[in-house]
Length: 127
Image (cartoon, rainbow, N blue to C red; front, top):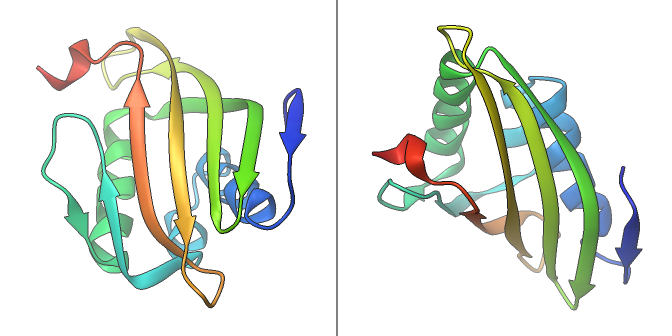
């Protein structure tokens, strides 16, 4: 975990999502999601449902066999968190990849992730 965590509540879930990403464990990632979760990822239509989001994460891992996230800040209010992160890795060709962004997370009343939305500094990979 990085520098700063503000607030309680969803900070643990937000951190667990990125721990699952760094462990390259799509089922652990999906296990934190509500069945009807929605994921907004740059360059795609909204991805609906935990099963489809898990499939997307598997594809992401295939496209980026090396990818690690570092969390710098988790800011929480009520059932929401904003996570500031950087990442580094390589795509399937071995080309280096780096990015920075913010992920917004909203939990449902049961404490499961109902909404995810990523914003990246560099979206050139979506073209």
